[in-house]
Amino acid sequence: MKDKKRAMGRGLGAILSAESKASVNSATDEGADKFVGNIMEVSLEDIDPNATQPRTYFDEKALNDLAQSIKTLGVIQPITLRKEGNRFEIISGERRFRASKMAGLKSVPAYIRLVNDQELLEMALVENIQREDLDAIEIALTYQRLLEEIGLTQENLSQRVGKERSTITNSIRLLRLNPDVQNAIRSGEISAGHGRAIISLEDSEKQSELFHKILKNTLSVRQAEQEASLLKNPNEASKKPKAQLPNHFKKVEKNLADILEVKVEIKTAANGKKGKIVLDFKNEEELAQILSHFK
Image (cartoon, rainbow, N blue to C red; front, side, top):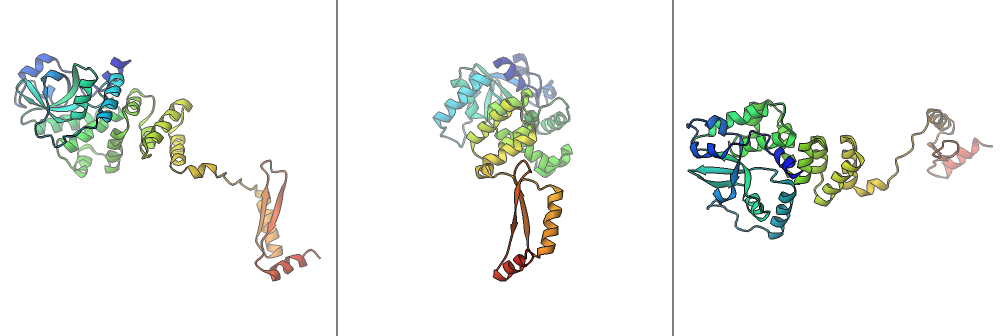
């Protein structure tokens, strides 16, 4: 199961062989077009942390949790490396790199940046978005790379790929989901619509609760959205929806209101066989007027 799930993270391109990494260093080298935009498996021994990494503190518990997730699911989101000769420097993903070491992995899936590959990478990623076999998480990862690594604005990206900005924003939000949920989207257990319902919840425990409800009860996207709304506003769950009054009772309400010249409300039991009539009056004068109709 682990190998199968890890393979899902490789859908953006074929994993490249170790031989290819030795010969391709620049976008002008032969074979660079196949190298750029794809994913390759890189030995952890060949990776160096970024010396200018602004982040110096990594929460130990969070790293342990991530390491446990990686043991179970593999690295869901490849890290990004800069190639320098036969070594690789981390551009982004140092938490995933450290957690992978803790999990006992020997290698990790990675995107590789080459010298002068900006234009080549942009073309590769934009072309990749047009593929029909990408899952929602892979699409989100590609959007993220175009924004972060190429430096496109969402407006530029919208024009380049022919998608609304809101579509791009909603897609990238899926990457905030925990690895279990992302993996479920990749494997087809749930849809991106389910993922959007889950991410609408700020609390991670509520997200997990909704995710398991979706799986257990095979909820539709609409049902998942309703559950998310109830989890956001638990008080709404205790409010019973008002029973719809049958049309023939509505006519009686109107007729009585016209005769008595006051507001009339008919309330029926759930079975519709019994109920009560409520007459509203504002003062004693209106009450006397109502009573006059019964003399």
